[in-house]
Image (cartoon, rainbow, N blue to C red):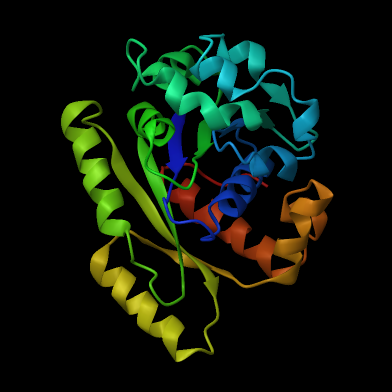
Length: 259
């Protein structure tokens, strides 16, 4: 049965979707059947895998609000061993619609249970907020990856995220754990970067990935071509970083990377 991981940070611009798309693609390339669930109304993970959001008829909205089967929404991508549950703009109003529904915090969990056995790993790209959609994700997953940018105010707001995780753990999902903390937009030449790394490691002892994600032009360009960076430019620094992250992620989960 597949392990489910939410990639979450309520702060925008931290490389959350970039990490969701590229880690999922890299794990798929290594031979593991992978699903990326886009539950961000912006739908950037959907377009980042080559789907036009306006052409998406059914999406994660229909799973969360309409109670449709996850299997009916999932689409195969053109990338190795990677499927997608797409998002579209309908999801923007989903929180208001599910607020008064029965089991409003576990709707996503119920939907994913039926397809977990089809995948080795399921990654969830969460919205940059701590609303009901993100709460649904936290209730549905085994663990979370928290991307943090190596910039000033990097830890701002993270205590709120950790409080939410603790609350979900106490009330709904006692098994949820921090999978890892990922440092993004890394530039080792800057003193500020080193200060942020030290601070993050103190805040999250033993949880920070050894792999860091650098600032990289090709990494920024890849989404506009609808491709993960490892398909867009295999030799780029960004591609190599996510390849290393996938290896580290798999080893930590007791899997051997397969080329």
